[in-house]
Image 1: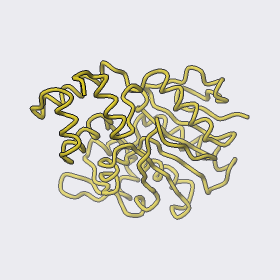
Image 2: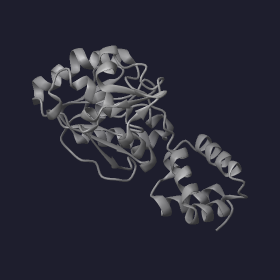
Image 3: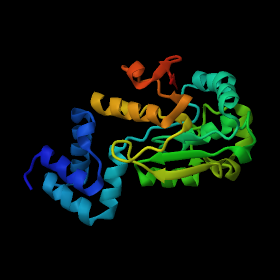
Image 4: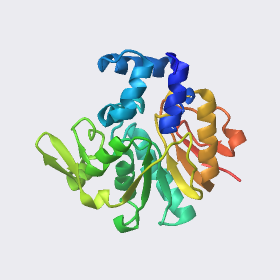
Length: 259
């Protein structure tokens, strides 16, 4: 194997099915180079060998490149809009047994926020969230459901009191909320997408992808929605060609699938 970043990307694709060509190159290469230096490894071939033979280094690599930054009720005004306008609209269109996908869910902040927001409109035992992420380490953290005070700062006070228990300096989310979310590993760039969703949430993740990869993912999200279904994206993202994807822009964060 030659000592180039191009060769490294090809090896990673073989090993993990993660296509680093779909990420912004300068940013991703800088992250990987710093990780190699941190581990005291000399060059890409030696790092590939370490990834193949040392599970701790492999897990660290996956966790590091899948850039996990999350918090509950991020951009609280948009969650208020969801509570007041979009959840009632979805219930009116599709009933209370909504099919919902939280994509690139990281440590679970977002799907658990969804459950709490929905709980104001739908009995908890009727709520089901399908949550996915590429990184099995963060999925493990999500299943534990333990968060610091900064992560839950945006949670409305009544819901914080109802669904969190303080454990030392951390906060444990209740089992009643955890039971409503089903976590799975999923690669947005490679794996198939399920269909007929009423609501898809994927926020502040695609900013790390190339423009071509972003368009592909947004197009697949649209194809996964029912007509009238909603896509909720992050404050740092926008869908440039949404009309060609059969989407209608409701506002900066919400897009609706049209026929």
